[in-house]
Image (tube, rainbow, N blue to C red; front, side):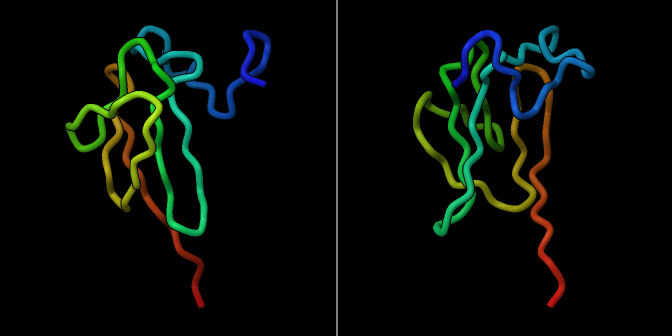
Length: 84
């Protein structure tokens, strides 16, 4: 449930998320056997990956060291692999 009373999985309130243009349900990151994907949830200010605007409701493959921009906030994707 993603209703107005449901807390987000990642809350950017402490980092001024709303003032930075981050929507309450901005995007979804999903992990599956084919990789890690990001999907913009029709956010007001959109999502950029490495400078390219993502189309809403479309999954995009994320790669190590990709840059995600949510409003004016920049996030770096880092994959940490367990040691074998």
